[in-house]
Amino acid sequence: MHFNKVLGTILVFCSLLSEAQKILSREIQGENDNDAYTLDFSRDQYYTQGVALRYRFLTDSSKWKPSLDKKVRSYVLNHRFYTAKHLWWEDTTEMDRPYAGQISLSATNEYYFKNSSYIYAELELGWMGPALRMGDLQYSWHKFFGMQLPLGWDYQIDDTPIINVYGKYAKALLEGEDMDLLSESNFAFGTGFSHFRQEFVFRLGNFLPIHKSTQYNGAIGRVNNGPKQFEGYFFLSPGIEYVTYNSTIEGGVIGSESVFTKTSEKWIYQTRAGLMFSWTKFDFALIYYRRTRETPESTFHKYMGIRLAQRF
Image (cartoon, rainbow, N blue to C red):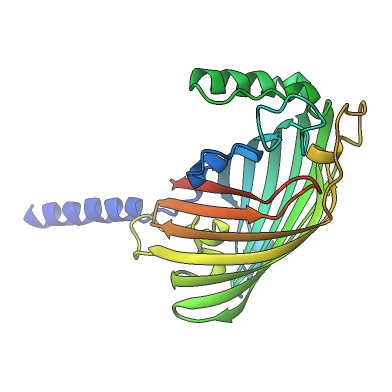
């Protein structure tokens, strides 16, 4: 009888341990970009607000073995605002870029390789233009909080569909225990954005390889209550971007011609810097962006992004 109790206790303990060791195969992620996060409240301009909500989950990667560590599928809801430099400008002779609002849905595949490399592919479908009533939303939001009212939405980019593909490839160039150097190549092509950007990412601190790191959302797939895999590090990423088309500035390629457009700058220099933290179930990232002018009349732009992720 005593032996049966001991055996029963062991079986219950093993069952609980097995439950605790489940792989965290799903993730909910939210990301918000806003120039207000720079604490420079004199700025509310250009890419002034963006929200992305993602549902991510592990998929079958058996066809890619043994080189692939994991494959992740995501579904994303995107919401973006673009405005001129000063919200009180009412006339196109003053404005340095058009207003624009976008809402879209995306599906993505991400491939994490054991040789510290990463591939990202995304298809985005959405809409931009007055039909979304984004101007009314921003106007009401600013009025409620007593902020400067945006007065230029009458000259926003006209209704047009967004059909875009995005790609990204990252690879470790130099690997060290406390610092490393990564190469990151990005491209976009479609009715919304078309560009190519090359960046180099320098990381300093306590980080994991690409296929496990929060740098590329690679923490999904960790074992619940397994060995601690904490990350806490700083990164700096300068880059150069060549733009062939930006619909939020030049207007849509499909639909009516917008009443007000500008010419996009072809070469843009972007710098990112941030702090990245990751625990077994949770990620937190704070990322600063600085971009040179996107039209001949505009100035440089800075904003910050906050990213949170919960795995289960």
